[in-house]
Image 1 (cartoon, rainbow, N blue to C red):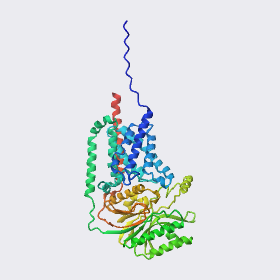
Image 2 (image 1 turned 60 degrees about the horizontal axis):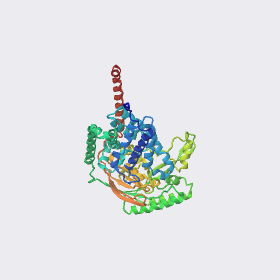
Image 3 (image 1 turned 45 degrees about the vertical axis):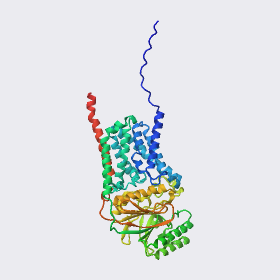
Image 4 (image 1 turned 30 degrees about the horizontal axis):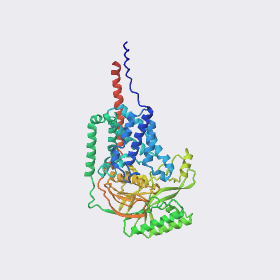
Length: 545
Protein backbone atom coordinates (compact mmCIF):
# COMPACT_ATOMS: atom_id res chain seq x y z
CA UNK A 1 0.00 0.00 0.00
CA UNK A 2 1.42 3.27 -1.15
CA UNK A 3 1.98 5.80 1.52
CA UNK A 4 0.23 9.12 0.99
CA UNK A 5 2.64 11.78 -0.01
CA UNK A 6 2.97 14.53 2.59
CA UNK A 7 1.65 17.84 1.57
CA UNK A 8 4.35 20.37 0.83
CA UNK A 9 4.81 22.70 3.78
CA UNK A 10 3.54 26.20 3.23
CA UNK A 11 6.30 28.77 2.91
CA UNK A 12 5.99 31.01 5.93
CA UNK A 13 7.50 34.49 6.09
CA UNK A 14 10.62 34.75 8.20
CA UNK A 15 9.82 36.04 11.63
CA UNK A 16 10.76 39.62 12.36
CA UNK A 17 13.70 40.04 14.73
CA UNK A 18 12.48 40.40 18.29
CA UNK A 19 11.84 43.97 19.28
CA UNK A 20 14.18 43.60 22.23
CA UNK A 21 17.10 42.68 19.95
CA UNK A 22 16.32 45.68 17.74
CA UNK A 23 16.34 47.96 20.75
CA UNK A 24 19.62 46.56 22.04
CA UNK A 25 21.21 46.96 18.60
CA UNK A 26 20.02 50.56 18.36
CA UNK A 27 21.31 51.38 21.84
CA UNK A 28 24.67 49.82 20.96
CA UNK A 29 24.88 51.97 17.83
CA UNK A 30 24.01 55.10 19.81
CA UNK A 31 26.61 54.23 22.44
CA UNK A 32 29.21 53.84 19.71
CA UNK A 33 28.43 57.22 18.18
CA UNK A 34 28.41 58.90 21.62
CA UNK A 35 31.91 57.54 22.25
CA UNK A 36 33.17 58.53 18.79
CA UNK A 37 31.67 62.01 19.22
CA UNK A 38 33.51 62.49 22.53
CA UNK A 39 36.81 61.20 21.13
CA UNK A 40 36.66 63.68 18.23
CA UNK A 41 37.37 66.46 20.75
CA UNK A 42 39.96 66.71 23.54
CA UNK A 43 38.90 63.87 25.80
CA UNK A 44 39.86 61.35 28.45
CA UNK A 45 41.70 59.46 25.68
CA UNK A 46 43.59 62.38 24.11
CA UNK A 47 44.19 65.91 25.35
CA UNK A 48 44.18 67.20 21.77
CA UNK A 49 41.39 65.03 20.39
CA UNK A 50 41.24 62.80 17.31
CA UNK A 51 39.69 65.23 14.84
CA UNK A 52 39.49 62.84 11.80
CA UNK A 53 37.05 60.68 13.80
CA UNK A 54 34.50 63.51 13.65
CA UNK A 55 33.85 62.88 9.93
CA UNK A 56 32.36 59.45 10.66
CA UNK A 57 31.44 59.79 14.35
CA UNK A 58 27.72 60.28 13.70
CA UNK A 59 27.26 57.48 11.15
CA UNK A 60 25.56 55.17 13.70
CA UNK A 61 23.28 58.03 14.82
CA UNK A 62 21.99 58.61 11.28
CA UNK A 63 21.63 54.86 10.80
CA UNK A 64 19.48 54.66 13.94
CA UNK A 65 17.40 57.57 12.64
CA UNK A 66 16.53 55.27 9.70
CA UNK A 67 16.13 52.02 11.67
CA UNK A 68 14.24 53.24 14.70
CA UNK A 69 10.52 52.83 15.13
CA UNK A 70 8.73 56.14 15.41
CA UNK A 71 7.66 55.45 18.98
CA UNK A 72 11.24 54.71 20.00
CA UNK A 73 12.94 57.68 18.31
CA UNK A 74 12.31 60.26 21.08
CA UNK A 75 13.57 57.86 23.75
CA UNK A 76 16.66 57.10 21.69
CA UNK A 77 17.23 60.84 21.46
CA UNK A 78 17.08 61.14 25.24
CA UNK A 79 19.54 58.26 25.62
CA UNK A 80 22.03 59.67 23.13
CA UNK A 81 21.82 63.24 24.48
CA UNK A 82 22.64 62.12 28.01
CA UNK A 83 25.36 59.61 27.13
CA UNK A 84 27.17 61.77 24.57
CA UNK A 85 27.53 64.71 26.96
CA UNK A 86 28.37 62.56 29.98
CA UNK A 87 31.29 61.19 27.94
CA UNK A 88 32.20 64.51 26.31
CA UNK A 89 31.80 66.79 29.35
CA UNK A 90 32.71 64.21 31.99
CA UNK A 91 34.93 66.80 33.71
CA UNK A 92 31.86 68.79 34.77
CA UNK A 93 31.34 66.21 37.49
CA UNK A 94 34.69 67.17 39.00
CA UNK A 95 33.41 70.71 39.48
CA UNK A 96 30.22 69.47 41.11
CA UNK A 97 28.25 66.24 40.46
CA UNK A 98 25.08 68.32 40.14
CA UNK A 99 26.33 69.78 36.85
CA UNK A 100 25.86 66.36 35.25
CA UNK A 101 22.18 66.75 36.12
CA UNK A 102 22.08 69.99 34.10
CA UNK A 103 24.12 69.82 30.87
CA UNK A 104 23.43 66.21 29.70
CA UNK A 105 19.66 66.46 30.41
CA UNK A 106 19.48 69.70 28.42
CA UNK A 107 21.06 67.98 25.42
CA UNK A 108 18.79 65.00 25.99
CA UNK A 109 15.87 67.38 25.55
CA UNK A 110 17.41 68.68 22.31
CA UNK A 111 17.80 65.17 20.88
CA UNK A 112 14.33 64.21 22.07
CA UNK A 113 13.24 66.57 19.29
CA UNK A 114 16.15 66.27 16.87
CA UNK A 115 16.27 62.50 16.39
CA UNK A 116 12.59 62.23 15.30
CA UNK A 117 13.17 65.20 12.97
CA UNK A 118 16.19 63.45 11.45
CA UNK A 119 14.02 60.34 11.02
CA UNK A 120 11.33 62.44 9.36
CA UNK A 121 13.89 63.77 6.86
CA UNK A 122 15.02 60.20 6.14
CA UNK A 123 11.40 59.11 5.61
CA UNK A 124 10.27 62.02 3.45
CA UNK A 125 13.44 61.98 1.34
CA UNK A 126 14.35 58.28 1.04
CA UNK A 127 17.09 58.98 -1.53
CA UNK A 128 18.67 62.30 -0.57
CA UNK A 129 17.51 62.69 3.02
CA UNK A 130 21.13 62.84 4.19
CA UNK A 131 21.51 66.31 2.66
CA UNK A 132 18.50 67.59 4.61
CA UNK A 133 19.82 65.91 7.76
CA UNK A 134 23.13 67.78 7.41
CA UNK A 135 21.21 71.05 7.12
CA UNK A 136 19.19 70.17 10.20
CA UNK A 137 22.35 69.43 12.18
CA UNK A 138 23.71 72.93 11.52
CA UNK A 139 20.34 74.39 12.53
CA UNK A 140 20.43 72.36 15.76
CA UNK A 141 23.90 73.63 16.65
CA UNK A 142 22.98 77.25 16.06
CA UNK A 143 19.32 77.67 17.00
CA UNK A 144 19.15 75.18 19.88
CA UNK A 145 22.67 74.79 21.30
CA UNK A 146 24.13 78.24 20.85
CA UNK A 147 21.24 80.66 21.23
CA UNK A 148 19.24 82.01 24.15
CA UNK A 149 19.65 81.57 27.88
CA UNK A 150 20.92 77.98 27.61
CA UNK A 151 23.55 78.77 24.94
CA UNK A 152 26.44 76.32 25.26
CA UNK A 153 28.91 76.02 22.38
CA UNK A 154 30.84 73.02 23.71
CA UNK A 155 30.37 70.13 21.30
CA UNK A 156 29.63 72.03 18.10
CA UNK A 157 31.10 69.61 15.61
CA UNK A 158 33.22 72.17 13.75
CA UNK A 159 35.29 72.86 16.87
CA UNK A 160 36.72 69.33 16.68
CA UNK A 161 38.78 70.52 13.68
CA UNK A 162 40.85 73.08 15.59
CA UNK A 163 44.10 71.34 14.56
CA UNK A 164 43.15 71.35 10.85
CA UNK A 165 44.09 75.01 10.37
CA UNK A 166 43.57 75.16 6.60
CA UNK A 167 39.94 74.24 7.21
CA UNK A 168 39.64 76.37 10.36
CA UNK A 169 40.59 79.48 8.37
CA UNK A 170 37.42 79.12 6.31
CA UNK A 171 35.62 80.34 9.44
CA UNK A 172 36.42 83.81 8.09
CA UNK A 173 33.68 83.09 5.52
CA UNK A 174 30.96 81.34 7.50
CA UNK A 175 32.06 81.01 11.13
CA UNK A 176 32.26 77.59 12.71
CA UNK A 177 28.96 76.63 11.05
CA UNK A 178 30.46 75.97 7.61
CA UNK A 179 33.09 73.74 9.18
CA UNK A 180 30.34 71.84 11.05
CA UNK A 181 28.45 71.36 7.78
CA UNK A 182 31.54 69.95 6.05
CA UNK A 183 32.25 67.60 8.96
CA UNK A 184 28.71 66.26 9.46
CA UNK A 185 27.88 65.60 5.78
CA UNK A 186 29.90 62.35 5.34
CA UNK A 187 28.34 60.88 8.48
CA UNK A 188 24.85 61.57 7.13
CA UNK A 189 25.71 60.21 3.68
CA UNK A 190 27.36 57.03 4.98
CA UNK A 191 24.49 56.47 7.41
CA UNK A 192 22.11 56.64 4.45
CA UNK A 193 24.25 54.22 2.42
CA UNK A 194 24.13 51.71 5.29
CA UNK A 195 20.34 51.68 5.50
CA UNK A 196 20.17 48.19 3.89
CA UNK A 197 23.10 46.86 5.88
CA UNK A 198 26.62 45.99 4.80
CA UNK A 199 25.35 43.85 1.92
CA UNK A 200 23.83 46.85 0.17
CA UNK A 201 26.41 49.40 1.25
CA UNK A 202 28.59 49.34 -1.88
CA UNK A 203 25.63 49.66 -4.24
CA UNK A 204 24.06 52.46 -2.20
CA UNK A 205 27.37 54.29 -2.03
CA UNK A 206 27.70 54.10 -5.83
CA UNK A 207 24.26 55.68 -6.14
CA UNK A 208 25.53 58.55 -3.99
CA UNK A 209 28.81 58.93 -5.84
CA UNK A 210 27.95 62.36 -7.26
CA UNK A 211 27.10 64.05 -3.91
CA UNK A 212 30.10 62.32 -2.31
CA UNK A 213 32.34 63.71 -5.03
CA UNK A 214 30.74 67.14 -4.62
CA UNK A 215 31.52 67.03 -0.89
CA UNK A 216 35.14 66.12 -1.66
CA UNK A 217 35.38 69.07 -4.06
CA UNK A 218 33.96 71.43 -1.42
CA UNK A 219 36.41 70.13 1.19
CA UNK A 220 39.33 70.50 -1.23
CA UNK A 221 38.21 74.03 -2.16
CA UNK A 222 37.86 74.96 1.52
CA UNK A 223 41.35 73.68 2.31
CA UNK A 224 42.76 75.51 -0.71
CA UNK A 225 41.06 78.72 0.43
CA UNK A 226 42.48 78.30 3.93
CA UNK A 227 45.98 77.82 2.54
CA UNK A 228 45.69 80.76 0.16
CA UNK A 229 44.43 83.16 2.84
CA UNK A 230 47.12 82.36 5.39
CA UNK A 231 48.33 85.68 6.78
CA UNK A 232 51.97 86.68 6.33
CA UNK A 233 53.15 88.55 9.42
CA UNK A 234 56.23 90.08 7.83
CA UNK A 235 56.42 93.70 8.97
CA UNK A 236 53.39 93.39 11.26
CA UNK A 237 53.84 95.10 14.65
CA UNK A 238 54.17 92.86 17.69
CA UNK A 239 52.33 93.17 20.99
CA UNK A 240 54.22 91.90 23.99
CA UNK A 241 51.88 90.64 26.71
CA UNK A 242 52.49 88.98 30.06
CA UNK A 243 49.84 86.42 31.02
CA UNK A 244 49.86 85.39 34.68
CA UNK A 245 48.64 81.90 35.60
CA UNK A 246 48.40 81.58 39.38
CA UNK A 247 47.02 77.98 39.47
CA UNK A 248 44.95 78.58 42.59
CA UNK A 249 41.26 78.94 43.25
CA UNK A 250 41.02 82.23 45.20
CA UNK A 251 37.33 81.67 45.98
CA UNK A 252 38.04 78.84 48.42
CA UNK A 253 39.20 79.86 51.88
CA UNK A 254 38.17 83.47 52.42
CA UNK A 255 40.76 86.10 53.37
CA UNK A 256 43.65 83.65 53.60
CA UNK A 257 42.98 82.49 50.04
CA UNK A 258 42.76 86.10 48.84
CA UNK A 259 46.11 86.91 50.43
CA UNK A 260 47.81 83.74 49.16
CA UNK A 261 46.48 84.28 45.66
CA UNK A 262 47.66 87.90 45.67
CA UNK A 263 51.12 86.84 46.77
CA UNK A 264 51.37 84.48 43.79
CA UNK A 265 50.03 87.09 41.40
CA UNK A 266 52.52 89.74 42.54
CA UNK A 267 55.44 87.31 42.45
CA UNK A 268 54.69 86.25 38.89
CA UNK A 269 53.97 89.85 37.85
CA UNK A 270 57.38 90.93 39.12
CA UNK A 271 58.96 88.21 37.00
CA UNK A 272 56.95 89.39 34.00
CA UNK A 273 57.78 93.09 34.49
CA UNK A 274 61.48 92.28 34.29
CA UNK A 275 60.84 91.41 30.59
CA UNK A 276 59.25 94.80 29.81
CA UNK A 277 55.82 93.72 28.50
CA UNK A 278 53.27 96.14 27.06
CA UNK A 279 50.47 94.74 29.24
CA UNK A 280 50.17 92.43 32.25
CA UNK A 281 47.00 90.30 32.42
CA UNK A 282 45.49 88.52 35.41
CA UNK A 283 42.79 85.90 34.85
CA UNK A 284 39.07 85.96 35.61
CA UNK A 285 38.46 87.02 39.26
CA UNK A 286 42.14 86.35 39.93
CA UNK A 287 41.71 88.80 42.78
CA UNK A 288 38.27 88.26 44.32
CA UNK A 289 37.65 91.24 46.67
CA UNK A 290 36.01 94.04 44.69
CA UNK A 291 38.83 96.57 44.34
CA UNK A 292 36.68 99.60 43.57
CA UNK A 293 34.07 98.70 46.19
CA UNK A 294 36.49 98.19 49.06
CA UNK A 295 38.36 101.35 48.13
CA UNK A 296 35.17 103.43 48.46
CA UNK A 297 33.31 101.49 51.17
CA UNK A 298 35.79 100.36 53.82
CA UNK A 299 33.46 98.05 55.70
CA UNK A 300 35.97 95.21 56.14
CA UNK A 301 39.27 96.62 57.39
CA UNK A 302 41.22 93.43 56.78
CA UNK A 303 40.09 93.13 53.17
CA UNK A 304 40.54 96.88 52.63
CA UNK A 305 44.19 96.65 53.69
CA UNK A 306 44.70 93.86 51.15
CA UNK A 307 43.07 95.97 48.43
CA UNK A 308 45.10 98.99 49.50
CA UNK A 309 48.38 97.06 49.22
CA UNK A 310 47.41 95.93 45.72
CA UNK A 311 46.60 99.47 44.60
CA UNK A 312 49.88 100.73 46.00
CA UNK A 313 51.70 98.04 44.01
CA UNK A 314 49.83 98.97 40.83
CA UNK A 315 50.56 102.65 41.45
CA UNK A 316 54.28 101.97 41.30
CA UNK A 317 54.10 100.28 37.88
CA UNK A 318 54.52 102.00 34.53
CA UNK A 319 52.95 99.05 32.68
CA UNK A 320 49.14 98.82 32.54
CA UNK A 321 47.44 95.83 34.22
CA UNK A 322 44.22 94.11 33.12
CA UNK A 323 42.73 92.37 36.16
CA UNK A 324 39.77 90.03 36.46
CA UNK A 325 37.78 91.21 39.48
CA UNK A 326 34.39 91.35 41.18
CA UNK A 327 33.12 94.83 40.35
CA UNK A 328 30.73 95.70 43.20
CA UNK A 329 28.52 98.76 42.76
CA UNK A 330 25.58 100.37 44.52
CA UNK A 331 22.31 100.26 42.64
CA UNK A 332 18.87 101.61 43.49
CA UNK A 333 15.89 99.26 43.42
CA UNK A 334 12.43 100.16 42.21
CA UNK A 335 11.44 100.98 45.79
CA UNK A 336 14.35 103.39 46.18
CA UNK A 337 16.45 101.05 48.32
CA UNK A 338 20.20 101.01 47.68
CA UNK A 339 21.69 97.53 47.27
CA UNK A 340 25.04 96.16 46.19
CA UNK A 341 25.20 94.47 42.78
CA UNK A 342 28.20 92.57 41.51
CA UNK A 343 29.59 92.20 38.00
CA UNK A 344 32.08 89.69 36.70
CA UNK A 345 34.51 92.24 35.33
CA UNK A 346 37.82 93.00 33.65
CA UNK A 347 39.36 96.24 34.92
CA UNK A 348 42.19 98.12 33.25
CA UNK A 349 44.59 99.89 35.64
CA UNK A 350 47.24 102.44 34.67
CA UNK A 351 49.59 103.47 37.51
CA UNK A 352 46.98 102.30 40.01
CA UNK A 353 44.13 104.29 38.48
CA UNK A 354 41.06 102.58 36.98
CA UNK A 355 40.99 103.50 33.28
CA UNK A 356 37.96 101.50 32.18
CA UNK A 357 35.88 98.46 33.10
CA UNK A 358 34.26 95.70 31.08
CA UNK A 359 31.36 93.87 32.68
CA UNK A 360 30.53 90.44 31.34
CA UNK A 361 27.73 90.51 28.75
CA UNK A 362 26.98 86.80 28.33
CA UNK A 363 26.66 85.04 31.67
CA UNK A 364 26.96 81.28 32.16
CA UNK A 365 23.48 79.79 32.67
CA UNK A 366 22.80 78.29 36.10
CA UNK A 367 26.25 79.09 37.54
CA UNK A 368 26.31 82.85 36.91
CA UNK A 369 22.75 83.69 35.95
CA UNK A 370 19.28 82.30 36.56
CA UNK A 371 16.49 84.70 35.58
CA UNK A 372 13.67 82.54 36.99
CA UNK A 373 14.31 83.18 40.69
CA UNK A 374 10.71 84.10 41.50
CA UNK A 375 9.16 81.27 39.52
CA UNK A 376 11.62 78.58 40.64
CA UNK A 377 12.98 79.50 44.09
CA UNK A 378 13.77 75.86 44.85
CA UNK A 379 16.13 75.66 41.86
CA UNK A 380 17.85 78.85 43.00
CA UNK A 381 18.36 77.42 46.49
CA UNK A 382 19.75 74.22 44.96
CA UNK A 383 22.18 76.19 42.77
CA UNK A 384 23.39 78.35 45.66
CA UNK A 385 23.91 75.26 47.78
CA UNK A 386 26.16 74.00 44.98
CA UNK A 387 28.42 77.06 45.54
CA UNK A 388 27.36 79.10 42.50
CA UNK A 389 27.79 82.87 42.38
CA UNK A 390 25.23 84.94 40.50
CA UNK A 391 26.30 88.14 38.73
CA UNK A 392 24.61 91.17 37.25
CA UNK A 393 24.75 91.31 33.45
CA UNK A 394 26.82 94.08 31.84
CA UNK A 395 25.44 96.38 29.16
CA UNK A 396 28.48 97.93 27.42
CA UNK A 397 30.81 96.59 24.72
CA UNK A 398 33.98 97.97 26.27
CA UNK A 399 37.03 98.32 24.03
CA UNK A 400 40.15 99.12 26.06
CA UNK A 401 43.18 101.01 24.86
CA UNK A 402 46.66 100.66 26.34
CA UNK A 403 49.96 101.57 24.74
CA UNK A 404 48.28 102.38 21.44
CA UNK A 405 46.60 98.97 21.19
CA UNK A 406 42.82 98.60 21.24
CA UNK A 407 41.58 95.32 22.67
CA UNK A 408 38.50 93.72 24.21
CA UNK A 409 38.43 91.32 27.15
CA UNK A 410 35.69 88.66 26.86
CA UNK A 411 35.45 86.79 30.14
CA UNK A 412 35.56 83.01 30.50
CA UNK A 413 33.25 81.19 28.09
CA UNK A 414 32.45 84.40 26.21
CA UNK A 415 35.25 83.45 23.82
CA UNK A 416 33.16 80.43 22.77
CA UNK A 417 30.65 82.67 20.96
CA UNK A 418 31.45 84.09 17.55
CA UNK A 419 28.92 86.90 17.81
CA UNK A 420 30.76 88.39 20.80
CA UNK A 421 34.16 88.39 19.10
CA UNK A 422 32.58 89.89 15.99
CA UNK A 423 30.88 92.59 18.07
CA UNK A 424 34.14 93.63 19.72
CA UNK A 425 36.15 93.62 16.50
CA UNK A 426 33.52 95.65 14.68
CA UNK A 427 33.74 98.21 17.51
CA UNK A 428 37.42 98.74 16.92
CA UNK A 429 39.22 96.01 18.90
CA UNK A 430 42.48 94.91 17.31
CA UNK A 431 42.81 91.80 19.49
CA UNK A 432 40.89 89.78 22.09
CA UNK A 433 42.30 89.21 25.57
CA UNK A 434 40.27 86.40 27.11
CA UNK A 435 40.50 86.02 30.90
CA UNK A 436 39.31 82.68 32.22
CA UNK A 437 39.12 80.59 35.37
CA UNK A 438 39.12 76.95 34.29
CA UNK A 439 40.73 75.74 37.52
CA UNK A 440 37.41 74.36 38.74
CA UNK A 441 37.36 71.71 35.96
CA UNK A 442 40.46 69.91 37.34
CA UNK A 443 40.79 68.62 33.78
CA UNK A 444 43.27 69.34 31.01
CA UNK A 445 40.85 68.02 28.32
CA UNK A 446 38.15 70.32 29.74
CA UNK A 447 40.48 73.32 29.53
CA UNK A 448 41.56 72.26 26.04
CA UNK A 449 37.94 72.04 24.86
CA UNK A 450 37.56 75.66 25.93
CA UNK A 451 40.77 76.82 24.25
CA UNK A 452 39.97 75.13 20.92
CA UNK A 453 36.99 77.43 20.44
CA UNK A 454 39.17 80.53 20.89
CA UNK A 455 41.14 79.33 17.84
CA UNK A 456 38.02 79.95 15.76
CA UNK A 457 37.57 83.48 17.14
CA UNK A 458 41.01 84.30 15.74
CA UNK A 459 40.27 82.68 12.38
CA UNK A 460 36.83 84.29 11.97
CA UNK A 461 38.24 87.80 12.15
CA UNK A 462 41.90 87.18 11.20
CA UNK A 463 42.89 88.85 14.44
CA UNK A 464 45.00 87.80 17.41
CA UNK A 465 43.56 86.21 20.55
CA UNK A 466 45.45 85.84 23.83
CA UNK A 467 44.18 83.91 26.84
CA UNK A 468 45.15 84.40 30.47
CA UNK A 469 43.70 81.63 32.61
CA UNK A 470 43.85 80.65 36.25
CA UNK A 471 45.09 77.15 35.46
CA UNK A 472 44.91 76.47 31.73
CA UNK A 473 45.08 76.96 28.84
CA UNK A 474 47.10 80.24 28.91
CA UNK A 475 48.29 80.88 25.36
CA UNK A 476 48.91 83.18 22.39
CA UNK A 477 46.93 82.59 19.17
CA UNK A 478 47.79 84.43 15.97
CA UNK A 479 45.44 85.62 13.23
CA UNK A 480 45.87 82.30 11.38
CA UNK A 481 44.45 80.38 14.34
CA UNK A 482 47.85 78.94 15.25
CA UNK A 483 48.73 78.54 18.92
CA UNK A 484 52.12 80.23 19.16
CA UNK A 485 52.96 79.55 22.80
CA UNK A 486 51.19 78.14 25.83
CA UNK A 487 51.84 77.37 29.47
CA UNK A 488 51.42 73.85 30.81
CA UNK A 489 47.96 73.52 32.34
CA UNK A 490 47.56 73.47 36.11
CA UNK A 491 50.98 74.93 36.84
CA UNK A 492 51.93 78.29 38.33
CA UNK A 493 53.80 80.56 35.93
CA UNK A 494 53.74 83.50 33.57
CA UNK A 495 53.80 83.54 29.79
CA UNK A 496 55.53 86.58 28.28
CA UNK A 497 55.36 86.54 24.51
CA UNK A 498 54.79 88.58 21.40
CA UNK A 499 51.73 88.17 19.23
CA UNK A 500 51.52 89.79 15.77
CA UNK A 501 48.75 92.41 15.59
CA UNK A 502 47.42 91.86 12.09
CA UNK A 503 44.64 94.38 11.44
CA UNK A 504 44.43 94.57 7.64
CA UNK A 505 41.08 94.31 5.92
CA UNK A 506 37.99 92.53 7.14
CA UNK A 507 36.28 89.18 6.63
CA UNK A 508 32.92 88.03 5.37
CA UNK A 509 32.13 86.76 8.86
CA UNK A 510 32.81 90.18 10.39
CA UNK A 511 30.50 91.77 7.82
CA UNK A 512 27.67 89.23 7.74
CA UNK A 513 28.03 87.32 10.99
CA UNK A 514 26.18 84.02 11.47
CA UNK A 515 24.56 84.03 8.04
CA UNK A 516 24.93 80.32 7.24
CA UNK A 517 22.53 78.74 9.81
CA UNK A 518 19.55 80.83 8.63
CA UNK A 519 20.39 79.81 5.05
CA UNK A 520 20.46 76.15 6.12
CA UNK A 521 17.11 76.61 7.86
CA UNK A 522 15.64 78.22 4.74
CA UNK A 523 16.90 75.37 2.54
CA UNK A 524 15.43 72.79 4.94
CA UNK A 525 12.07 74.59 4.86
CA UNK A 526 12.15 74.77 1.06
CA UNK A 527 12.91 71.05 0.91
CA UNK A 528 9.95 70.32 3.20
CA UNK A 529 7.66 72.55 1.10
CA UNK A 530 8.81 70.79 -2.07
CA UNK A 531 8.07 67.38 -0.50
CA UNK A 532 4.57 68.48 0.52
CA UNK A 533 3.88 69.93 -2.94
CA UNK A 534 5.12 66.74 -4.61
CA UNK A 535 2.86 64.64 -2.43
CA UNK A 536 -0.15 66.82 -3.17
CA UNK A 537 0.52 66.62 -6.92
CA UNK A 538 0.78 62.84 -6.77
CA UNK A 539 -2.57 62.31 -5.04
CA UNK A 540 -4.88 62.78 -8.09
CA UNK A 541 -2.86 60.24 -10.07
CA UNK A 542 -2.85 57.79 -7.19
CA UNK A 543 -6.63 57.98 -6.73
CA UNK A 544 -7.20 57.63 -10.49
CA UNK A 545 -5.01 54.56 -10.62
